[in-house]
Structures are given as structure tokens and as C-alpha cells.
Amino acid sequence: MIALAHRLDALGLRPTEASVLMVVEANPNITQSDIGRLLGIVSANMAPLVSRLEERDLVERTPMDGRSHGLGLRPGGRSLTARVKKVITAHERTLLSKVPASCRTAFMTGLRAIWEES
Amino acid sequence: MIALAHRLDALGLRPTEASVLMVVEANPNITQSDIGRLLGIVSANMAPLVSRLEERDLVERTPMDGRSHGLGLRPGGRSLTARVKKVITAHERTLLSKVPASCRTAFMTGLRAIWEES
DNA sequence: TATTGTTATACTCTATAACTATA
DNA sequence: TATAGTTATAGAGTATAACAATA
Image (cartoon, rainbow over all chains, first blue to last red; front, top):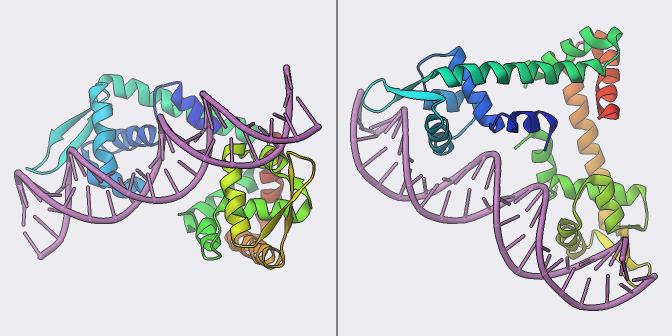
């Protein structure tokens, strides 16, 4: 397992679940289908994923109209998301510490350039 | 599918198969278990992988001692490996072209630093 | 008609267990 | 006893198909 996935696993989360929590935090009442479009998760896989988060009382579904549900964080989900973000920034710092200091700015610029154009 | 995997798929190869071809080219008569250790492929998965390459007449197994087989490229495997390497360098060039020219040297230095220390 | 959410299912990749043959 | 290779199988992760309810 890759290092970040291993750290998230220690929080009881799969990478996709951690991503969904962060998206919900940043976009209160976003619907499952919108999350799926944003993260590239097909709706057939969103359903059981959200059910798992709901069963752990991390998120709650609020009916928006008759067919779509807006997602919001429950208190436990809010604190867990905070821990997720700490894990991710710690992981990024670990990686970046291996890059010689003189290269770091250009390195990050390069990464972002590749990310944004893909 | 990620872009490089899609390009390799056009050659009828999975990423692991392409890696094995390149390792065999660089290490004639390397054994299956040594390839597995080098690439992190468990031996249970090496067996069918090599069988697929053998059935396509890309590699041949030569008995080394009674239990291990050295792998070598057949002519078709040699030419296909050349195409694999072209695909990979083209892919790397595509990615690197998105990085501003002034960042490229530092960017590659950073990538290598992270790779080597992991 | 199109969209949301759901279930069932299939496929790929990778891992473990158990085994044979050989060193 | 350890290693090379093989087979069978199980587990993730992700994909498609078909469907009900709603817009």
C-alpha cells in the first residue's frame, strides 16, 4: 500500500472516502452525483461509499428534492476530516523534505503545471 | 485508464508486462523470481504474466538449472520493447513539456530525490 | 426524456495459501 | 531446509447494466 493510503487506513478511511469527506467539508450540501463528477467516482460506487460514511455517523444525507441528497458533515466527520488534512499535509511535507531546498519552488511549480494541464 | 497505460494498451501490453520486457532486455537470462524481486511482482503473478508473453512469442524460457528459467527476448519481443521505450519517452516528453522550461532541471532533480529516497 | 440514486454483477490487479520439483 | 515455479483462490478497487423514483 502506498504511504498515504496506509496513513489514511490508520484513520479507518480508504483514499476515496477521505477525498469525499474533504469535498463535503468544502461544499456543504453537495449531492452524491456532483461529488462523483468532481472526483471521478461513478455513482454506482458512490452509493455504498456514502452509506459506509453514514453508518459511521460521519456524514448525513439531507433530501434536496425528491431524488437528490445533499451531504453534510456530522461532528465526528468534521473532526475526522481535520485529521485527514493533517495527515495529508504531513505526508506532503515528508515528500518535500527529500527535495533539495534549492529545488522546492521550481519542483512545486512543475507539479502544478502538469496537474493543471492534465 | 492513465495516459501511459492507455498507450501501452495500444501495443497489447499491460504496464507490468511492459516493465518485464524492459527488464529482460536489460538483463538477459534473468530469472522470473529475480524479475519479481526487482519489480515487486509476486511470483504467483509472474507465472501467468510470462506465459502470456511466451504465447505471443515475445520471450523464451531457457532452463538454467532444474528449477529456474532464464528469460530472453525473441525477435518480436525485441522490436516491441523498442516501441515500448519510444512510447515511454514520448510520454515523459509530453509531461515535461507542460513544465515551464526554467523549472525543468530542478523539477527532475526533485523527482529523482523523492524516488531514490523512497 | 433525462437525472439521481441504487443494486447486482463483472473485470482487473494484486495478494495469500498450498503444492511440486529441485537445490 | 530453502528456493523456483505453478495453480487456485480471495480480496480490493472500479466498471457496466438494469432498474425505480423523480424532474
